[in-house]
Image 1: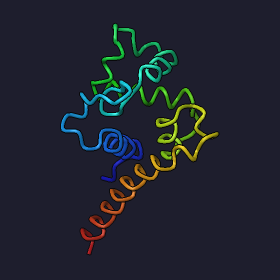
Image 2: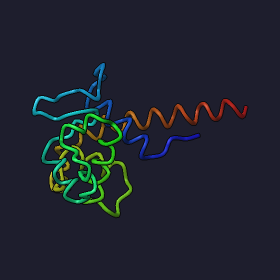
Image 3: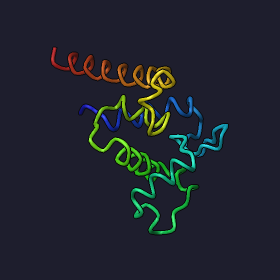
Length: 135
């Protein structure tokens, strides 16, 4: 089965954000970003303000170390700022640079390039494997 775009997105940003950290869920960035997706506290606040149910059971910023919860935070953030956009390039640039990323795309070009390389390689590998199975 081909991975979904959302799965590809999360797999790629994990690698880009944590650089192969041996324990990505507990990775801590230079500016205090947490977890596999290196979420900042303001990002988390934006996401939970948009979807208050994400803190209904007392969750805190520290909970972004749980990958399942972190994915919900990222998707809430995307839904808040790019609700009708299903393009992983927009998602990656938003994740990296915030809601005003369109005014400063040059600042996200390198980040998007790294995400794209991972996604492109996985898609190519998938289709190469699929072709090999039918030959």
